[in-house]
Each structure stands twice: as structure tokens, then as C-alpha cells.
Image (cartoon, rainbow, N blue to C red; front, side, top):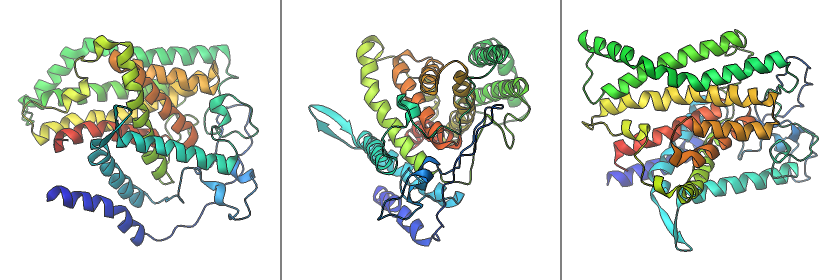
Length: 396
């Protein structure tokens, strides 16, 4: 009975929200501003993408119909988008991910089918509005309009600047291994907290230790990046980090989450076929954290903070905001997307999931370039990791 009520609530929530929300005015896309030679940060309007403004509208569509490529007319208010995003996410996790059907003798999940449908609909809509299903910056073909105008192009950087970018990238990737030698220090801090009265159970200790360790690591590395590449690396008007909370991010987040999960599900069997001896490898660190020894909600909540909040923020700043854009100094954008995806998969140090995680990193990079908003991959990453903890809590 409770499950039925939950399902009904989830299905009716989007419709109810749509009825009570006021109609929002359409936004017109405007032409991309001319790019200065230096600095090389180029801007675009939040609605992705300005190219649509130059396309002639069809006779049966209003002039501004091409201003949005992701799906229905976008919402911009934060709260309505958050409510609808949560409702869609819960439907995906609690219903679609638990249903499957047989196709050609193999089980195919409804979540995979929905993700492939999202990719197909997005390509078809883009084909109708812009005349091509794949942007030129992704397939390498020639194009007159630059849809990747929100991404840094560092191809004109000097040799000294390229060397500085390289050393920063190496430090970002190597620092976690160096922090392993500080484990006794973090253990001492953790036990000191217990001694002064912080109520940490034995089951909550791994999550608390990870929180202290990763918070220290993330803070040090982000300050290092900011010191080497400008004090306004994160601030307003930053050339590196473009993130907007108030803006149309609902459809890219929900659609991007479904699409990336579908690609992961399709590629994972390929990884297992190439490395069959790793098919039954030990579970990863996130899966271990999602199953505390005492099964308590408090221990699960403490364990979830770093993977569901800290890791999405830091890893997207690292992989998408810095590494992806830094690689444009030596690679074309599509090459930088592929290379940053491989690095994203490799840094998780799970050989059994190297290929699907690399594809996931590539897809999230494409979503960042396409949306021009770092909030999109951050939220998708957070929903991705939350799925493990939510499944453990609900027993899914």
C-alpha cells in the first residue's frame, strides 16, 4: 500500500506542479558576442544555443521557437525545477531502474530504453531546429556557428602557459596518492573528535574519516588551482567556471542523467567481455560506504555526504571546469572531451569499470559544453552517486 501511494505521488507531482506554477515568458536567443583574442573565454547565453537565433523560423513556429534545444519550454525558477527534478529522479530510480524486458534473449532495463529515447529525441529536435543532429564541435565537421562558445579555447596559449596548465593537471591527478601518506593524521583527528564527545559510532567512522580527508584534499587543491590560474577562478565573471543556479537546467539534468546511465549500462557488458576476470571484482568504495555495518540511517547519512555532495562539486570542477578546458591548449575540443573522459574513468581506479566510467565522463563533458553551465554535470553526478545510497536505504 505504501509503495502504491509513493508511486502515485511521484507520478502526480509533476502534473500538480505544472498546474500551480505560473507561466514563464519565453526568452529570445541573442547572437554570441565576438570573441576577444585574449583572454580566450568566450560567452554564450544560458539557453543554449545562440546559433538558433540565426536560423530562419519555420512558417508554423514563432520566431523564438529555436531558442531552446533540450525539450519543452524551459523553467527558470529554482524551486519548481528542483521539485520536478526530484520527482523525475525518484520515478527513474524507484520504477524504471527496477523494470526490464527481454530483447533478443538479453534483458534490457526500462531505464536504458528511456535514456536511449532521450538521446534520440534530442537528436531529432536538434535536426529539426538546426539542420544537424550532432554539433560540429563533436563530430569534427565544418560549421559556421560555434555552439561551444561557452568553453575556453586555449589553443593560442604560450608555451609557458601550456607548461603551467600541464603541471597543474599533474598535481590534481597525483595529489590524492600523496594524501594516502597522511592517513595517520586524519585518524588522529577523527579519534580526537570522539574523545571530545562527538557521537560517532564504529559504523559511522569510515564515512566521517572520508569526509575529513576529502574536504582537506579538495580545499587544498582548489586553492592551488586558484592561486596558479587567477584569484577569480571561482568568482563572478570567472573565465573558467561558469555556473548558474537560476536558469533552465531541469531538462539537461534529467535528460543527461537518463542518457548517461543508458550509455553506462550498454558499455559495461563490453568492459566485462574484455576483462572477464574482473566481472566479480570486489565492490567499489562508494558501494561499501552505502552499506554500513549497523545499517543505521545516521551512519548512511554521514557516509553519503562526501560522495553525494563533495565529490560532485570537486570532480566536476577538476574534470570539466579545469582539465577539459586546459586540454584545449593542445587538443581540439572533441579530443579534449575524449581525453578528459578517459582521465575521469582512470582516476576512479576501478579497472572493471574503466570503459563505462570513461564514457560517462565523456557524456558529462558534452553536457557541460552544450549547456555552458557547470551546474548540469554537478547535479547529474550528485544524482548518480545518491542512487547508490538511496537504493541501500530503501532496499531497492
